[in-house]
Each structure stands twice: as structure tokens, then as C-alpha cells.
Image (cartoon, rainbow, N blue to C red; front, top):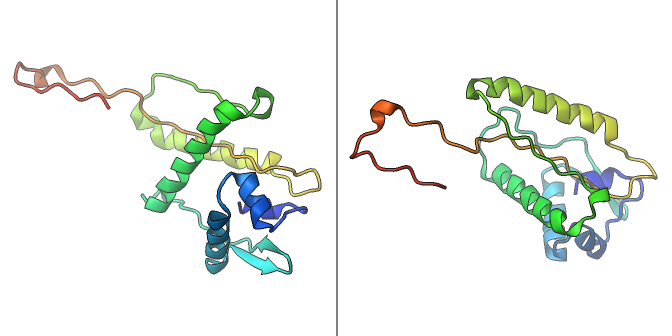
Length: 161
């Protein structure tokens, strides 16, 4: 919602915001109050303006709030898959063999891409009509093989999750 208020035609009407973001007006009011309290947004006449100060988790420290944010983004992606035309979204996946030791390098490449993408496409002009999200995920689809020594008749089988 923060990006919504970066646009020049941003509405502060809670009913309109609830419709645009597909949440309740109560959730909109709570989010606006929380962002003002945290100094992320400030009330300006009939609208809100970003203060330029917002929370970033640069060290990737585990946080319930960050996990909840990512869950919400994934839920929105699932809805978009069935409710948004192909012309208005892009979804793709790459499945590859990956060396987990390369994770720090991969995370840096992905972070650099997100920054470059935002710098190229983030617009706060009259043409801005919608807020979009670019979400990236990199995670293991499989578990590492069990060492042969560890396999014995008494070794319990792994659970599939």
C-alpha cells in the first residue's frame, strides 16, 4: 500500500483502497494507522504521503512479520493466477540443479535484479494506475540424498512434506 501513495492520483478513501487491494476497510484503516505510527506514512490534508523511511531487513533476520508479508504475497499470486489475464501478469519458474554453497552469490544476483527492476519500472507519475508486485523465490524442491552409510534396515524413511 505504501507504493500506492507514491502516485500522484493516490486516493485515501478507505472503501476505494479496500476494493483496490481486495481487503476489508478495517484492514485498510489498521494498516494506515500502523504505517503512520511507525513513521512510514504521514497524513497530508486528504491523503497520505510516504516519509521515505521504511523498514528493510538487510540481514535476512527471521521475523514473523516478514514471514506473514511473504505469505500474503504468495496468496495474492495464487489469486492472480486465476483472476488476472495473462496480458496483465507474468509468472514463470526455472527448475535447476543447484549447489547450495552458491546461495550467497545467487541471493546477491537476485537482489541486484530486484533493485534494477524497481529502478527501471517504478513510476510515480500520472500514468501510474496500479501497484504491482515482483516476487522472487529460490528454495530447494528436493532434499539432499541420504549418505549410503546412513541407510540401514532400521533407518526410518524420510517424511515427504
